[in-house]
Length: 360
Image (cartoon, rainbow, N blue to C red; front, side, top):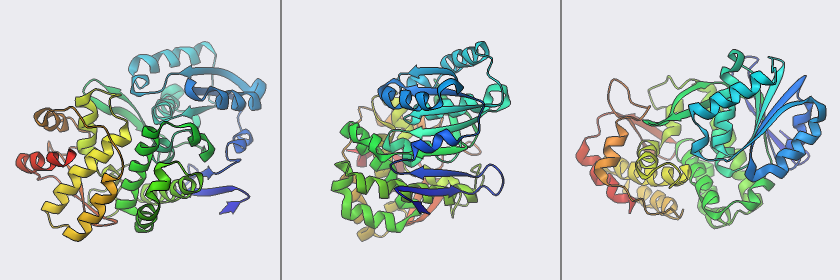
């Protein structure tokens, strides 16, 4: 549904936890309609002017605010514990709504804090990076990292509302735009053939942060993810035919690269693009039609990424701690066709080594 300049996508969970994602100019203005006696705002200092605008709109209802330096370093036990102490000192109660403003690391942390403080506060996400808008801020996954790997401690806790204004993407670094486009392409490959065709036609404009292209891309990604999440909220469907695990296409190698290269060396979306190159190579090996594989590879390779300085042995070892393992086996999401993903757990080391050559 489109009202004025704001498009709304419903994430339908079948109960009172269902929520709206508002996309467009004016989406953030809708935050003030939240039914909350008090508000807590966690925000990335990189978008402090936007955060302070939101804080000013809530006025005296803001009981606590805290600026954070975004990045994987915020997703730690230590910082989460500090925030718990701050909330306790501010006498925050369950009538409070937490608002997380920033990229995916800030919304991940904010959602995790909201999920666990007082056994659960309501929260809202205001994603300000393209990557967060198409992925982290929608779907209810919240988490912090451990030394052993990303997102190993977390909980499913859906936001009550998500507000996305594509104008926030205008000042993003080109690498951050590319990272977000990479995650959007992943969604297209596993869940939206029309978005894949749209990105084929508009990849240059997307990478140039064209606001019209990004608004359409975000809306389609949110709608696709909402469909997937509604069908498998807690990622328990292992068939690969429509379960939430399909959204991890490119993530097995991607997460391993992030860990091996050192968190922060690669944007998450860049790691996913590299991981998709490996997943495509494995998909080819298992029967993906060469002509289609070439077409997909052309689009994946159009997204610029750094060259990862990671030994193949180290990457393979890092996949062993991937949270998608089951029964001790490392799982990969592969594709038979666009929007036809499937899960395998029998990829041998020799195949993985061959696939890793695609990273170059």
